[in-house]
Length: 171
Image (cartoon, rainbow, N blue to C red; front, side, top):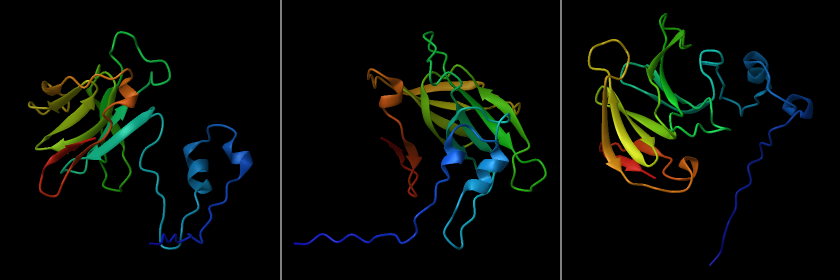
């Protein structure tokens, strides 16, 4: 038996001066180097989003974003993350505004759109959140699965996706 590795000839260059701290979004965008044929585009940045952890798109092109403003210092009350809906009002592909969809969603790590709402992993639970009255805020919160208890919410269930067959996958 044999093992074969293919080396990627593209080696990204890192400018040490650019890695010494946070950069403005426009400066960061210029620092990306891509292989020919690919581009990097800025869709949203601070202050529109803060401390993003996960993002998904719904069937209307809106983005749902989990934000963890207390990620480095978790809130002992368990309130933790919030979820925003980002909207592109003028159709240029760049999000223009954000609306608070849900707050106090604990240690949320992943989300995926599903039938007009979103599933959210927030260890130890899986939730389904949905806006039922058109105000872009989750007024329906249903606990779908509970009991995945590990010492840290950030080291437990962390990935959520929907297969082409519309099966929900949790890892």
